[in-house]
Length: 73
Image (cartoon, rainbow, N blue to C red):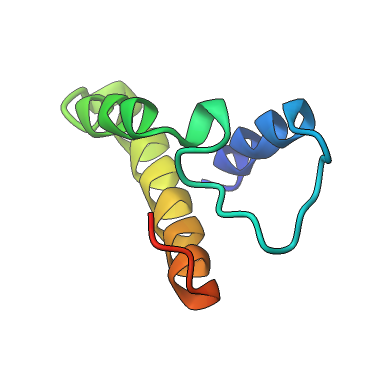
């Protein structure tokens, strides 16, 4: 589950790398709606289920951050 935090490596592709008011959802490549859909598909397979769960929880927490900042997805 902790390894799913590596999904944030896509933040290095952004310019600037860190922006405190930026919503990650649908901005970074591994945080797009398409990627999230793939994470849901990965829930179906037993070997990838725990990874998919970790990735979806990560997206949920990033989404909560977006909501908290007032940026709607």
